[in-house]
Amino acid sequence: MDRNKVVMLAALLALWLVMLLGGAGDVDRGLLLKAYSADHAVLEPVARFITFFGEWYTAVAFTLAGAGWMAWRGLRREAFILLIACATGRILVILEKDWFARLRPDEHMRLVEVSSHSFPSGHSSNAMMVYLGIALLGFTGRARRIAMGVALALIAAVGVSRPMLGVHWPSDVVGGWSFGPSGCCSSSG
Image 1 (cartoon, rainbow, N blue to C red):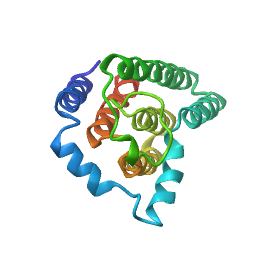
Image 2 (cartoon, helix red, strand yellow):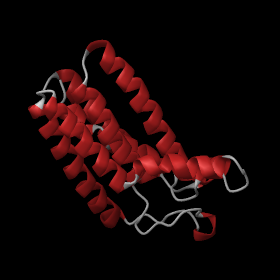
Image 3 (cartoon, rainbow, N blue to C red):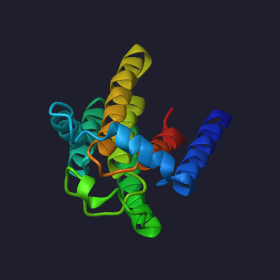
């Protein structure tokens, strides 16, 4: 692994650790209240739609479609990396949620159903792993830059939708974002 990837992974790990240790406090509560969309007739349905792209079943569908597309194009190694990175990443997120058991924002704020602990955001991690993985592993050159732009916009939107729906602290989202790319960053070209 080259030096740049090591530095990137170390920075992501440090950010993840800061979000784990410093989250769910006054700053998180203030940011959550600013992002919360319950009082906005337009923002709430938009957030509900966008959050769909971080659901586990959507992530599985896009992972399988992306890996199939890569394999069809002869990128079998990249397809395999995407499958392994997304599957192991998803398992690790589930284990992290159970291990750290961070409480979610107050139940009366939740605009969608949730059934697991808060840290890290699975939706944010899913979006990072899948969409960033497809962009990094499935494209090159100018097409990669365009795919990265689209992926990053979708990743940001999915992450922001979680506090808007009152189901995650902002630090959960940043924790998910910082955890999600580690598999793809460590294995991409």
